[in-house]
Length: 226
Image 1: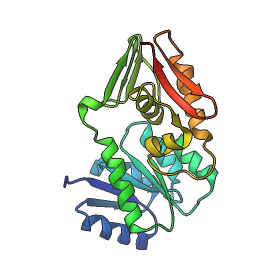
Image 2: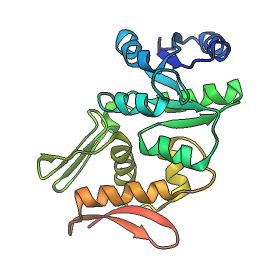
Image 3: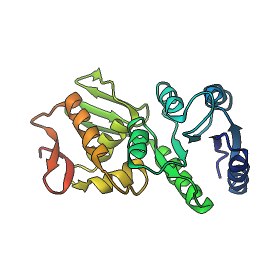
């Protein structure tokens, strides 16, 4: 397998050791960090392919670390936390986390989530850009342009727009979008999808040629004129 480097940020050294052991058995290269305020420097040093990030950290909490990472990088981030509250999950999604795993977790589940996130982030280049009249969405450089003008959109909004636009005409429920775009089954409040769709609409608007539509009682679809 590819020599993917995974940075694990957690202040519990026992958990670090267990995660490192399982990841190395799967062939991953592992770097570890125990403090939030050192995580960004570690990120720059090791240039990981994916980050496992605990929420409760000394020096700087995981939410702040995630915000700083998202300000400069689209590298996948999976949040690790002892908190299983719905609001914590929504916060992680809103800040741009790619997945969210509450502790305690099974090693097999963690490995499956990591592989799924890495698989999505390494999609073939020819599947990373889609064009409609006046609109281009690219996962190659995580950009959206409208009439040639770049839009300021965070990674998860771009991924959601790309997912819907690349499956033009197909309707997806909120739960399906959470599973496909965020990468896991989300139990509880699915309002985060509505929030992301609302923000996308505010930025791209709608055209006679295409529209991000609500299918009442079902979910959402991206529809283009024939």
